Length: 259
View 1 (cartoon, rainbow, N blue to C red):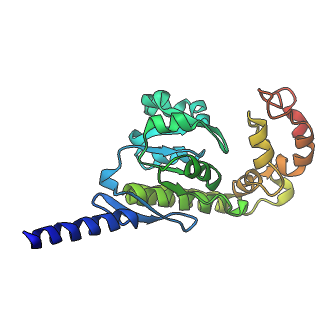
View 2: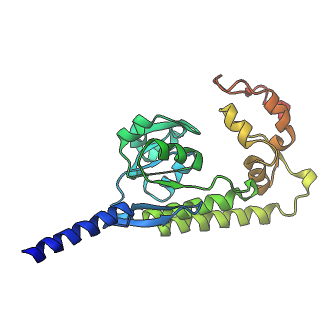
View 3: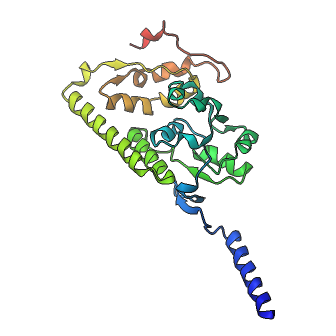
């Protein structure tokens, strides 16, 4: 009887130690995210509910075929109605994240995700307000590496959800497409390349992304164009409305000024 009590005590101590040290239990695994943090998340076959709280990374869930696992996302995804053609349930997914570091924590908790994926800024907020595990993407990468960064994100999502084959298929397709564009535009001299204007509805987003050295100019150059935003960034930013104003900051009628 005494030996049995000792054995039970030892078992309880071991189990308690496992909980306190955050050791991996059945149906879980240790995962290293894009910024090098170690986090305990469910194994791919145990994932049922996930929150992706950064845009456009929500769309990676569609790329790897895991959109049915989404229980929370960022509000900007609602604007892309094309995705609802493929997955009508998107219209009913909770969207607790309004914009960077602006989160309805109560709505996130109500969605009850097993873990969250997002930028460090957003995941820091989740860490402070909840006990939900967080996986971070790397938003500090050089804008010139926009396509390499996107492939790294897709690869990480594939590893999380056990969808490595679909992730690789997408990355291979992107590489092939970019190589084709490079080959077809390589002989075009700089002064003969077409200029492109990329208008975005959200003024704050444009100010962040269209600035000189931002992702938009690099993406345009990769596609064989010259980005008007690269030449007009300072002018555009002076015309921006205040962040609390809504609506497009440049109308279709005024777009010709950037040609």
